[in-house]
Image (cartoon, rainbow, N blue to C red; front, side):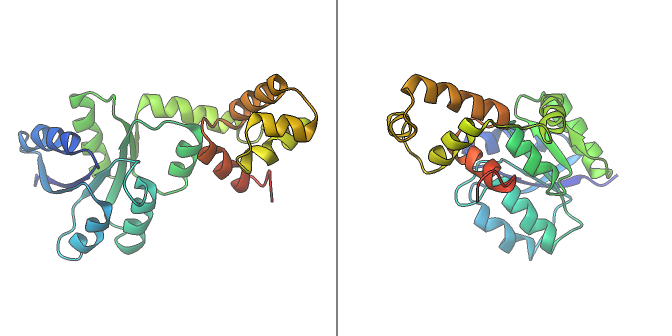
Length: 208
């Protein structure tokens, strides 16, 4: 069997070095390139095309899913997988919509990583157990997010990046109440930061 040709993408050089060291010592794999800047990937693919692109989610300029969508659009035969610490429901949801071939946690063992790459190369979709847990949560809650009228009021001001005190003054409630609503909003939407909440709110038409 020919070696599985792999391109690695991660903005941390130590991660790239570690992955290359691991895979280069196994004749089943051939790391043909590694990039810390995603903008270098597409020009490279005009000359050489790997079997699998393994990319981090957090990258400078674009995220891993955006890179995968671009690769899939131009080279649908290339298999693409995320290797990331990100397991937020909003990220998992986006990943499942992006026709990815694998979603691997960076907590994955060396043996599991190699097994996952073999399965992905054979045409299967491989998702790490930790990511599967989040996927189940996404499926169970996607149609069940119900914010109260007051939470919707607070959400509208959170999206405008207003601090708790300002929101409290505008809605004539206490800062502590605003903080409680804020926590409930993040919990119900499965997000944990403003960017994720904004993305979720727009995609699910919670705000105009």
